[in-house]
Image (tube, rainbow, N blue to C red; front, top):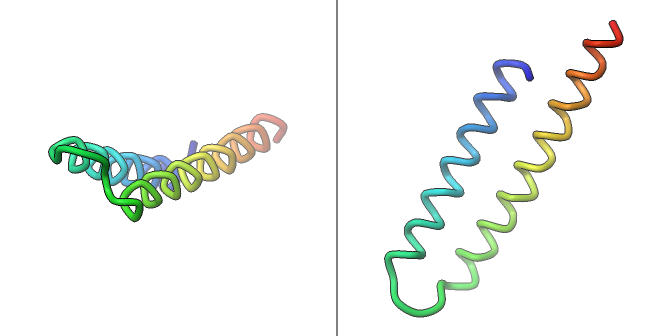
Length: 62
């Protein structure tokens, strides 16, 4: 994985983790907007991982 993609992935995961811990600090159900943000981040994380896998495969093939 390129350094830039790896750095982006780390930032996205850290932000998602921070949101999840913030939701855990409150009693009751988290706000729908917070849940939506976590889900959207999960989608972006998956997309970045897919692009990184494609780039790694392309690099292996030369």
